[in-house]
Image 1: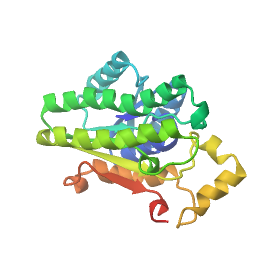
Image 2: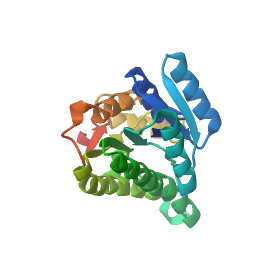
Image 3: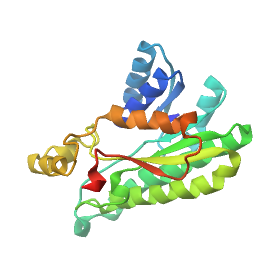
Length: 242
């Protein structure tokens, strides 16, 4: 199950999981984007089902879980990828925008994680939960107080979930993408000066691509990472060492 799978990083994760033989629930608030992802999965010979979900709404999350169980019988992996981003100076940041970003990026991961983890515990087979965080969980940039707060909170939520779910055989980890070219980041990359500033901070001298993050997700969702939990894997081209 991949939330936010209608585009960008999370679409790439859904496609990579399908390449590995997984049946994928493509969950997104945008039905059109989700349908396109499902079409791409099926065109590649994979299995996929669409679930329209606003991760701020518990009733829609419950319906998403039901869709997965009705269609595939179980949930082995959850990727909490649904997210929003905006740029706004701290002194001008409106409460409504603060609440919107925190509700999707942090509360949404809590609600989805809780609903799926309850099903994993009930089934007794363990599982993997991945939260898509950011390098901005540990470093900040101007005009992103709301976004970095949501991602920093998501990092600590990952650790809290990992501690409590470990006895049930559920691994919980996060991925911290650096600067990745997606529809979500298109606006922040549109200014040439900002784009060059961001690129100059990356030792590998390129922006990431969605598949870079998807490859890391495959590792954290696989048996090869069975002794990894409560950590954040940064996929950032070396951004945090520069």
